[in-house]
Image 1: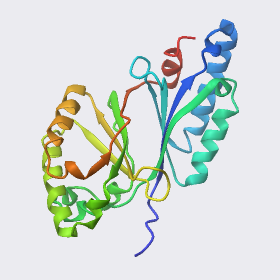
Image 2: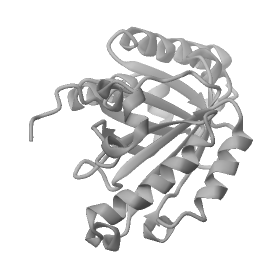
Image 3: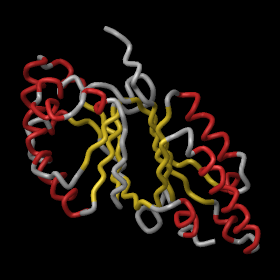
Image 4: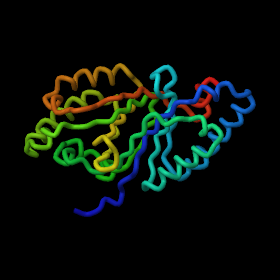
Length: 234
């Protein structure tokens, strides 16, 4: 098998702010936000970066940075650069999901692949829809003991359901050997109810019993970095 040189490294990093930051003087909070936003802007030339607010969505995360880089070193550069900022000293990473893009083992036999350039399976291209739903995903051991034909058949059903929801764009990345989960799934949409309907329908799919874990799930609102930081309340 040849190495896929087009593969990208993907990270979804979720942060919660130390309440002590909100008690800082207003000018100190403003300064720290400007510095943080400046670092994001500077690194934006090297990465695909999107920033999201989770205020009011969960208790354990208030902001998320979706970053796509050419390699693992790029992700470390971003993480350390943000940690060195004044605001970074008050941010706790509560969840972090690391993955890479690659060609799907199932999509090649599916008609959807004929409509997409092969490179599109290994390149993350955010659509900048206002909502992004993210969760880690792990299959059961029994799934991998099934024949490839049986798995393909069930995944065909899965794809057919997804095609009924064109308003929801899926981004699949792979974590085998890189992180605790096997996949990280991101769904972009302008209509949250359509994503809710999609998930409900997939609960009835034949392959559902082979899902070991697909939580926690994060509801993220796309915001420019300055607005994301203003949502923190400081």
